[in-house]
Image 1 (cartoon, rainbow, N blue to C red):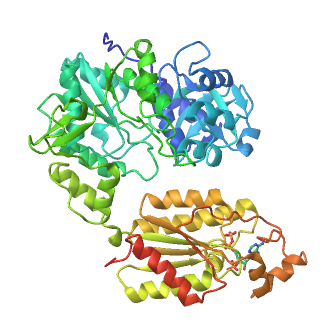
Image 2: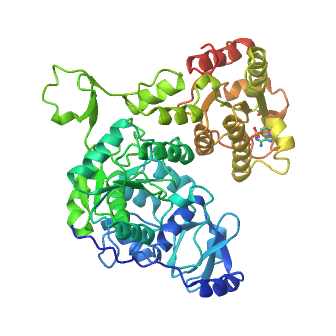
Image 3: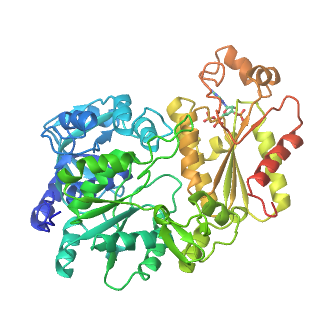
Length: 570
Ligand code: PPS
């Protein structure tokens, strides 16, 4: 397909106009962008999302959700929307200009609001992500993180979001186009990734480039990827090491600040359009491209080749050619990687492969990672970030009714872990947190959520820094517990322990006399009596306290931690 390296339209105004606009925008109503919106805005402004001129209005949104096309018929598979809270939405009317600020308050852009509407999120989930199932990270985001109201309208770019890391590796679409022009690269095949690269990836990308007679662009995502992925700092250090393995001047790397949605087929088409904007002619699409993992029934959200099929259908219209990803395996006898489906003597040779799950297990358990699988520099970086589980921090998160025994068991667990030694242990007990961190909060849903998010924040910092956090709040809402889990799991294990003492038993014990007062109506919104409690569906451990003493309950947690490989010597 013909390459066109003319610049793509950007939404920035000139430097002088930007200075003026920045001052004027100081008086506008301001929206503080979320991390995902900052990623979206960067790609809107720099032309990565060309032909979009701003956050989608309602007509374009409906059309994209239903047909994968903007209202004017242009192919665009992903709704790029500005979700806001109700309070903010109430202050905005169509026709109004608002300022869009980053998390430090810097004004990045203004937006003329043309549309304001309450989206049908269930429909968006079904149509865009294939199911209204919160096991899908983007559906979970849609229902539990995104605000209830969408605003749409054209954006005027003032400045790019500031990045302090890997500056030399970040390029706008026009900068990459200029690079390709300068280097005389007429055909460029891009490889999209959110994972570290190992030898198989190096081999397949190099083959893809050779077969398409193209140069290679490693184009990893450094915006937002799937919760639990290896952080981008580590990955970029790994990529830099792999880059040296390609023959000189065949390959380059650029970082893409995209917030992925893990939307499989639609995401593949979206990725293709974004790459086209970056001046790329070919794009590698793998098996289960941008797959979100399993749904709540334990099945894959998308078929393994759905992404390739949808891409293929739109290839001509997109003007970017798909290069199907080959499944590369190591053939021991020939000491080289070969595409699995091209090996004719399968029965006579030894085929080796290490899956992502197996790699994680080996890292977690400090086991050998062979040289045929990855480059030593990559393994060293990964081991620094992912030390064996027994050396990582983790969080034990107790949840259960008031008076269920959470605090007592948590205390016993703390003492047992301190006796074993090795890592600092912090107990974030419900009552203690409410005295120190959350003294101004009550027991409304909003306040309980804030309380748990604060506990989660502290626990994730402790976990990140290699300590053990034990939390013991009621934490009645499943969605909040899940959000805390996601925050923590990027740093270490999250062990949810449901203290399953029945309400009747808690009320019978009524250690603090609170149930009596709740029954008498003297305490409002009391969990279990006049306020809900979502029973955890899949906790790592459920403890029945009615038939065991405290020591035994705490020991059950220790056994679970050992089984999960979290304790030294386990
Ligand atoms: S939450 O829902 O997770 O934010 O609650 P938490 O921070 O764990 O605080 C629970 C403790 O506060 C006391 N208390 C109440 N609990 C539930 N509902 C209402 N309305 C309420 N009012 C006060 C109660 O002593 C809880 O302590 P525990 O240790 O759980 O018994």
